[in-house]
Length: 199
Image (cartoon, rainbow, N blue to C red; front, side, top):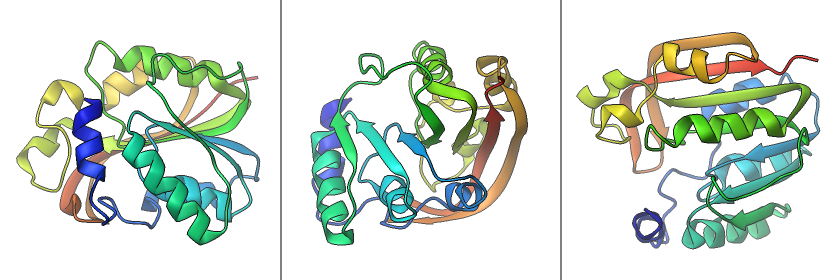
C-alpha cells in the first residue's frame, strides 16, 4: 500500500489539487480555531488550508512522497505543519488532544476501518468535532475516483455504528461534482459526516 501511494505522489503535479476539500472548508468555517488532526493527509491540501486559518495542524500519512510534497507546499504557503510519515494503526497521539479531526477520503480495508475510527474517537477532546467525507458504496458506478472494492467504501449504517458513541449531527449520502486535481474529477457518490464527542 505504501509503495502505491509513494508512486502516485511522485509526480510534481498535486494529484488531488492544492485547494481544500469543499466539505471541509465549509464546516471548518463555523468552528473556533484550535488544534486539528488531518489523518491520511496526502499532499497536504486540507492541512495547509487549516494552518492558513490559524489552526495548530497535526497530520500524518503512510507516504513519504506525500509528506515531502505537503511540506514543500507548506513552505511555499508560509505555514507550519506537524506532519509525520506513519501508519494509522501504529501512530500515537495523546488521548483527547484534538478539537477537530478531518478524515478526507481515507479508505481502508474493512477489518482496519473500525480500528482507525476508534482511534479518532479517543483522540478527540470532549466537545470536539469529527468531520468525514468519503465515497459511498454507489461510487463503484462512477469513474471520478476511489477504491474499486465496495468493502472499502462507506455507507451511513457503517459510519453510524463506528461512531455510535458520538453525537451525530450529519450522516448523509449525496451525489456531488468533484474538482480536486486529476484523480478526483466529475460526478461522485459521497458520504458526509459531522459528529461531536460528548462531554
